Image 1 (spheres, rainbow, N blue to C red):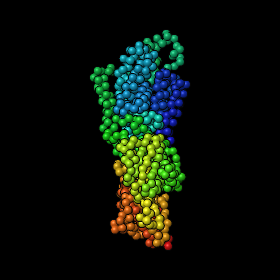
Image 2 (image 1 turned 135 degrees about the horizontal axis):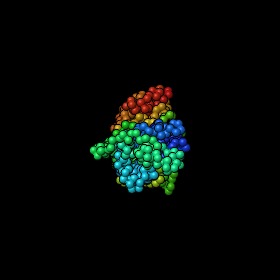
Image 3 (image 1 turned 45 degrees about the vertical axis):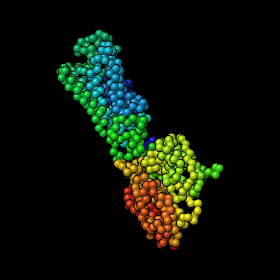
Image 4 (image 1 turned 120 degrees about the vertical axis):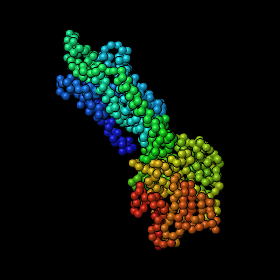
Length: 631
């Protein structure tokens, strides 16, 4: 599934890598006179490095015309390619295996890179060098391990010095899918890391081949393998090497070892200096990233998490913080609401022995805040905001809350007097409801006025993503509150939606919202209220939003504030205004009279909040509602 623009590159690269590896395998085993171990080396390296591996094969090893392989692979730079290919094939295989296992076992990143190094080195040394090259190198397996140890160590150090920081920085970047083996991005990052590792290890391998410490490319022809031992002895006598020596020193049997013959012997100071340098490079590549990212993070803690653009991530950024700010995984969406669907629909209760029973179900859905803009939302009963619960003072209510979110959740009844165990703060008054779980809230309503309900487990995330709804409680005595011709609820919210992903909007780096909604819609998709001159409307402003104080303003004259936070104001305390500051959690009931015909707008007086992703549409956007007054 395409979740980010980079996914197009990822899938294309992986497809090209597979096709490139198939071609190299076909050509190597059908046409190229190469030793079997090198055939497999090029196939694996091409599988890991994609078109880069294919390029190396064609430019350095593929026989251009029959009978020319010996001459073609003779240059030292090509021998260095062969040596590096053989190194990378073994080392990278071990690293990839270790990366998958450590991720699945839940090891932190700092242990991951160490285990990867150990597995890569051991597989390269014990299998790809000492075992697979035994027939070519001759001697005992133990002797081959001893002879291969130092060249393999130097090459592996440089390879991991290049590969480790690439893996760490890309896996610990914005897109945490790169940490989890079932994600395509994981394999793309591994491919990039191996490619950089190859590049860093190549100069050392050229030096090792030039000094006769490693093998390079070689030629193995059927005629040579079938020739008599006398013929072999003659060739060996002429060039002063056995076939094994030729192969070990990186030349084709039957070809002069020009660069080996003229090479100066390796001195102890040279070997000591190079060894020290490779270890310094290795330590820098593996542990310098610790100054920038949290190497204590485990893949299972953040798998599939994608951070918002601009989020600052430091070594102190915990997995909890990463999960909290991460985008909703579109693969979790269980329902796509029709584009014209509205939230805040009144939910009718059913009566059970005099108790009003409501069923609330939380799930991940796609929801249109504009005709062309969808968000991945945490919805209740498949709507944003959740359904409106209308009660009467004195009601006995039971609310069955079922959680189908990918994370634990609870419900809180904001401003209501309820038994403590029914209040809803997760881990404080109750254990959060796990995914697939259910909890029953039950209480007697003791108040009247404008209230709301919302998640109280990670509310900075869950409420921001849509887990809230209006709770309107009518007084027993309907004459106790001022009358109006219409009653309209305004629930405010802020959204962050970029590149098709929805993040919880937060007042911190990378979390600032770019869309604003009233009742789950942004203007011009918000409701249009229609009235006649002389009629009045009660507007219930509810701060269901998480971040900003919104100065809500109505054109066409002042309104009268009659209630605050669910409490009706005495007549003497009521006042007129044309702007009321609605903060998160606050509620104001106001009555506005239609004085003049025309189109009047209700909107937030922060201009940026009346735009859609910084764009004005049809004169406004975001937190705007149109009131059309006819004569």
